[in-house]
Image 1 (cartoon, rainbow, N blue to C red):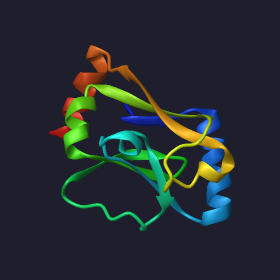
Image 2: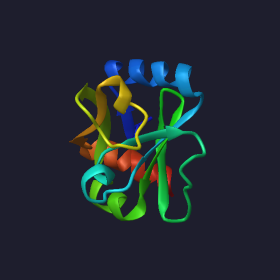
Image 3: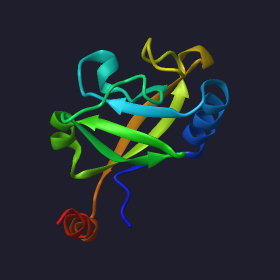
Length: 121
């Protein structure tokens, strides 16, 4: 199975820490300016998703959504959620930890693209 979104060990460790504090979580990446272009972590259900969002998958048993418009730019890549030192988005839960989630990516191979296309049909 080809995952559209994955996470580094450091990101998974921070997700577990945040779940212990806040309970179930969710991610959303809107593709907007500034904070919106970063993955934002919320208590699950606090951010409303709808028809304009795509569920890419889960990282650390946590759903990861992206706006459809942004997805069109990123659909040829696998998103790799990482964590670095620093302050992230002011509404994202990791901010008080002195960390911020960061999206890295890699282009899917031709074989991976074929597998994804078969899954979508």
